[in-house]
Length: 375
Image (cartoon, rainbow, N blue to C red; front, top):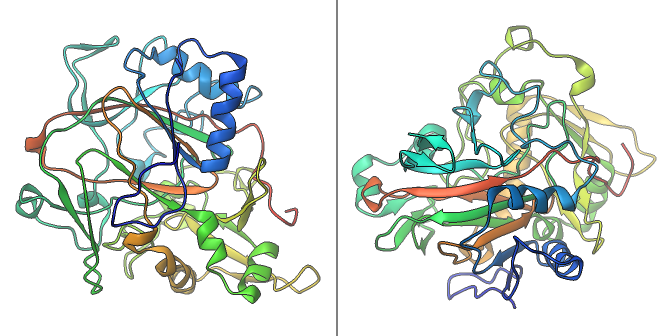
């Protein structure tokens, strides 16, 4: 069933699934869910209040059975020294293998074996160039945090699919999401939800010439990218980098090796539909490898300002309320999304609205994203 978009959005993706039990998923139902994720990009599976964390992990691993059985941010290359702007280390639920808590607030004396945990996810106050005041937030004004896809990307492949099980949702009046970029754009949303942008739609917004270049071009993150990003900040819209700030010099980063710095295609091809998505992580890209055609000479850009201006010009085309999906889900529902075809962001809410508890799972892919042209 297609997701209801509401009056604010014309986003043409997303679906709802009912009548299945993720704790006891038949092969037939598994294929239905898998195909829905790759066809509709974002899927809300209703009525999963009793989902066991281990079963959530097993579902994600079933999507990529050759992948390493760890959470996507819990690889051997992620340490307290290298986690950088990702924030505090994640709390893995005991016995789940790779399901973590994301959210805000005290999670209880014993939450699935986690004792006395207070969750604090990164907010726009940490990331934005010009954050709101706490008073603004209490007055129901908010922002998107940072649109991104999931994965460490240094030494491991981006996760294919992310699942979010909504265990506890904050309660309160709707929030007004502000761009604060001079455009005057706003959206409204219930508290505790997640926003999505369709990277295939970004690709379709390119000119024909830009598409040819993107199809043949690549990008590379910096080594130890979440430390390298340094003091730079994200734009107030939550999408793209703001001017200013400094990256960390490569010789000042935690230890790294060149073979763990991957060169990604700019365009990632959906393995089921064949759709092409323009997929770049704005805050960690260090180099762009431009080719205007398959036989053209490669031009490498590694000036941070040039990278930022070029990428923001493309991202600004999509960053409008009509293109952003904020699916409505509640406690007990599971949100699943194709991490290779969408960008997503949290939406901050006032502390007075209460605790948010999401069980999150994604795992490093066993394969590299496939582009129209091989790396």
